[in-house]
Length: 187
Image 1: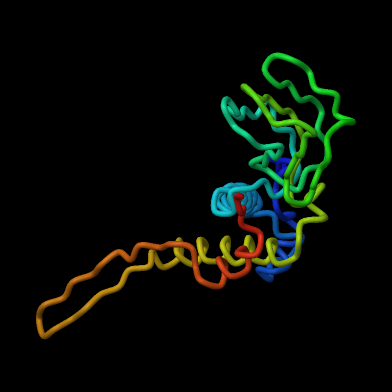
Image 2: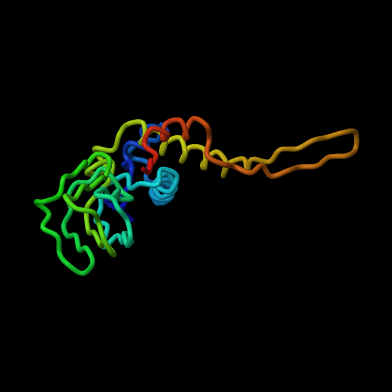
């Protein structure tokens, strides 16, 4: 199994962080699955793609709107490949783009349904993912592996009475802190 091109970190970098020898391949399939799962969870938390990919026909209903601005759900934008407004293809050269924030400005107000196909993400490829996002993924994988080892059972004992509880596990504060600066902000 090979990691998809949208993985937020490489298997080699994760293994280095975990202190696992590059020659030890016994858990590579598990590590790859966890990288994928944590990348998806991080993207859901951020509301954005980490590694750039094509977004096909993201619809925007601008019926009755009185604005020249449109913010895309994913950004930074690498490329807009097509833009159709109310059934008409728009000449992309008339647009002003704020690629970093995913904002498109048109000389006139947007109208009707706008369909956009574009490429967007925080990084162009796995190797260029910001280090703090990679670090968040490494910590997240490590937390899951630790959970797997000890099942995160907490317990109490009072005399002859003993009870154990399973502890819910949400995103760890240090992971959230590493990701926070990359969360999507809407207009």
